[in-house]
Image (cartoon, rainbow, N blue to C red; front, side, top):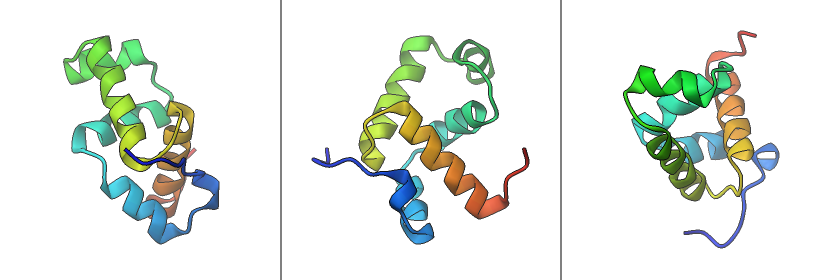
Length: 89
């Protein structure tokens, strides 16, 4: 685990890419749903997982990219999505 927190708004595009590349496909799928505005309870049946598993995967994702909160994680992912594919409201 890293001993510092990443501020997603202070990263360059290459650093954002690197941070997101550290996530698993499942973590990315969860984040895609959250960035689209879906709630946890709406994501659970889509991925066939329970709430504990979803929250555990988000916590592990925070550790992997070095952020302290899930909101920072979602912000980092939204920035990555914008930089890679463009923001589609």
